[in-house]
Length: 249
Image (tube, rainbow, N blue to C red; front, side):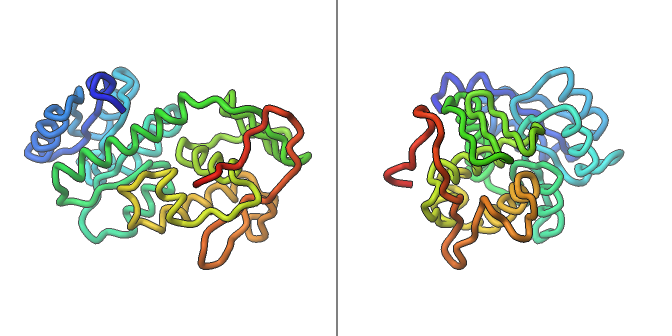
């Protein structure tokens, strides 16, 4: 992502601590981002709707609505990337945020370098998905994927995938029949910054299975290669424009 594009990215900071907001604002503006602020949950919801930011940094602890409720309300109408700001060691908060639709989390206290790195990584994932065009794949009578339109159909019903879920599914399907390791998926889907976060892969594989598998406990599409990674079941490509497995993942 080049600097010209970075300068057009608009970040909404949601935190009731003025010193924290100032710290984040200074570092993001130094890196070329545009920044807006919100100090309460309802104010954040209003600004997401009116300002249409490119990314939201959302603190868990807010004076009116907590960050989880704010995220839940945002996700009813918007797929804007959200990074949760959580207290050190609060593992339950991080998992809950991801389950509600957060794209990532940063644990307080964090360094300016970590902050900017995570923001850039999430924006890269979103931008790559938005600009990709691939083709239509019919796995079987149940599952159809239209990568031109970013649509996934299961049993004739359109299934909504979050950006990270879509990107994970794409890389698995692109390598259908081949084992993709945890490290490879972390690198391809989340970025090199996430090489020490293996739980992301497990969590999002579970999300995908719940949305596309007939029986998530006994998956027929996304198969586990224990101790190695995951493999999307091989299938017969029915159109000449279907994507091919990568030579290198």
